[in-house]
Image (cartoon, rainbow, N blue to C red; front, side, top):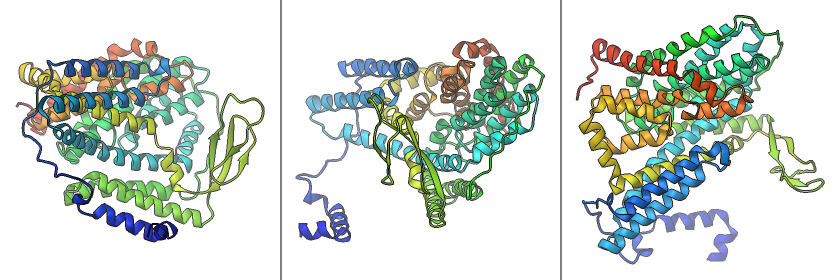
Length: 506
């Protein structure tokens, strides 16, 4: 039987499927008992103290990625494993309970799985549009218009604000930065201020859409805020972007850059992919709003649209260009096997064309970012299981109140990434009104704009701008950004409480 299953792939698949569906008694010697209702408070034990130290050290390494060049996913993934291993060891040796920690980890992994699959589908679409030259065509069109520097300042900021609710704020910021770099390479002052404006706009635009930022996506998938309710944050988000932009634009020169005639034609199928992306978003929203299904199911269904269209493009003979990095450090010429069977004999990079394959776009997803989310969610989940998040929740939302606590969430996200901060709030699940949940969604989304290291968009632009946009360039305008942050909170309280009567108290 083993030989037959090995020889025939279809039969082998059937055998594996039958084994997967077989009763659990075939594979386990005992039945897992139900999870105990009560969990232990480990905050004052060696496990709690050690876990807290491990998380702080791991996140310090994440914040120092620019200097250490250690990818941010590595320390948090290691920290997650160590924290949960200590928790499980304590439970086993103290109470003999082998299943409480296991069930808690399963819950956290499910949280990550939904986020992972959703982002994987979105990233694949963005990569496909990038390969079809959608973003390059937009950049070339802007350059050819010959706008003044001040006009470009407002156009790139406004486009970042409008595109980030659909595409992620990181991709949007990189696209707009490419525009200002192309037209202002000899104007470092313009590039620096324009990049600050783009970071603020991309973060603000992502705050009023479930798709615009990881934090809004997490809130939406939790079912705390409905899809249409996010748009109540539109006016506060506009205020957050417009207030600092109004002060910064006075430092932008009014002269025009030298004319550049760059033309980019989108590849075949680009408009169809854009249309399919919009259909995918509509599918995710419809599945959640009308059928009560998780949004991730709609996104994965939409990914199937792209896969089928990719198959059509491949059958039509459409080809794609791929760049491969060759191993470094060798002496002389290097032979390198390409996925399509060709052998490269050049050091550095090889560009090769091959039939269009959507799996190449999927493979180019930001895997370090996705694995970073895994580590963060498991780390914060572990600290929550230990009991620290309950202590923070009681102090923040019980003692000092949700208004001040949610305002501080945004300030904290300027120093620490907003993803663990928001996941911690969701894990604590404080008893708040819709108005306060909207407020914390807003502050977590835009708070990172106060420092260049406060958001992925800011960190990425520091690397792309060739020294024209730096931490201290951004810091110079932080008081005005903080003014916009405060104005957006006031705008939320006025617009959504007094106009739409969204409850704030409670």
